[in-house]
Image 1 (cartoon, one colour):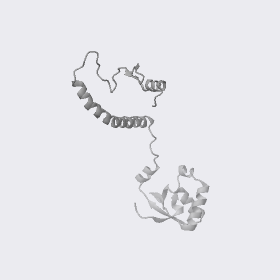
Image 2 (cartoon, one colour):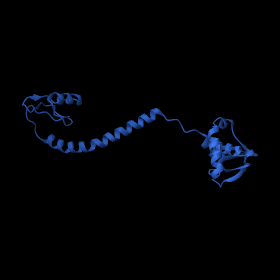
Image 3 (cartoon, helix red, strand yellow):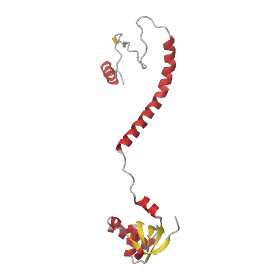
Image 4 (tube, one colour):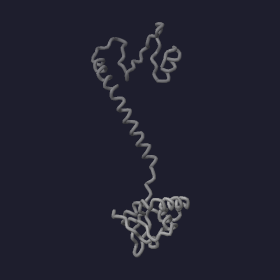
Length: 176
């Protein structure tokens, strides 16, 4: 971008679409600020034949007009830059966001499972090579499915789900 230059206010055209966004209270506040400290930020304009078209800075322009200024600090931008600034950002795609969240959760789960899989892998390798006796089963994902003895000596079937385990803990008075 080039350096700011002073442009005549009456040579700056404001598109009707931009004019609809004008807020008088913002213009008044900016006018007070410009009186106190001057115009800090230049407006952005693009050249169009014998005049300039406002790209950004409607409230600053209107504040300078209200103060009776004849010129305003402005930066000239190309038509392409102006188009890029005027285009709204693309709307978020809910399906894409959902897929991204799911991918992130899957990766987090895989990372969390790595240490557990590594420890199971070393123990599982030993268990897989050991000969089995009659009635013995191979462990499935860390659970054998066999009955477990309780403190009183009675055997209780190993829970198959987390909710079964919680219910079993509540019945036995255990902490979970």
